[in-house]
Image (cartoon, rainbow, N blue to C red):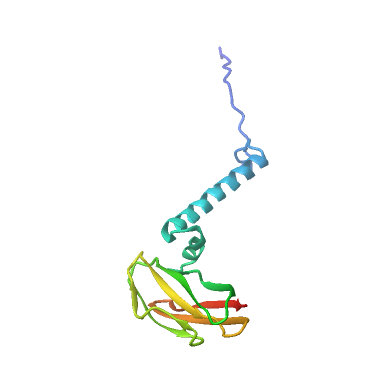
Length: 166
């Protein structure tokens, strides 16, 4: 006599286009993506800050600059006519090689600088002293100093000097 055997069977869909169902809401997914993006961005900015020595210079470092002049522009306001004003520009060498500041080109004889050449060792900084003589009469002035380097990809840097003599 034949016996009937009942077996429990599992029903499996043959439609392969249905993947695993994500139970997270779209808002939760969006927040997770935003947090992950912020973490990655903060990591890169942190690396730039750590390598360049400051938040202001971290963006320049992340863009590939390895010789950073701070400030890049000198603004002199309400100076007296025929006055000599001294400003300091900090030069940071963020490269892995010694960089030499070879010399400078000035837009006028009213600007004097350190004596060149100046060597800056890797990951060191050097101060440039710039002396600016204001015009003999009250007026606005615009000048520049171009610094020449031996750093590959950055052969010169221009520092603008602007202001008013009152």
